[in-house]
Image (tube, rainbow, N blue to C red; front, side):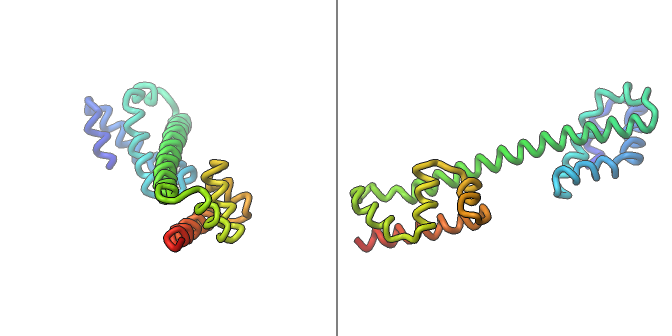
Amino acid sequence: MFYLSLSAVNEDENKIFQAQLYELYGAAVLKAAQTILNGRQDAEDVLQDTFLKIIPHLGRLRELDPDERKGYLIQTAKHVSYDKLRRIKKEKKAAEKQLEASEAYELDLAGGYDADTLYKAVAQLDERERYVIYARFEAELTYEAVAAQLGVSEGNARQIMSRALKKLRELMKGE
């Protein structure tokens, strides 16, 4: 992976200098990224991105002493890691919204049923299932908030929702 960034450096002298930086500080940069990201693959991506990002600053890095170079590289890796974390969170939120939309579609039972039938079916759910349905679709709370309210994990709140939707579909078919 590192050699991809070397191809972006125009001068041979800079390629050699960047390779030396990688050999000296690559492990420290990787460790800093892993500390923030908790994942080897993402940390390796950050390592690559960090060495791509420093290309325009190689001249400045030459002027620094070794400790300052290491600090500069680690600080750059931290910034790149936090950027990656933000992207990961944004992608996760987008995926959750897509899941929520599919859940809303699944719950769109009123298409062939009146509200009274829906309320009767919801009343047959247990208390936690009713709460999750209300919290997600009426109060528009996140799974994280629902989980906190119930004192369960986010994954458990999702399971409760899934079971509740399945029961509702079965109850609506039966009426």
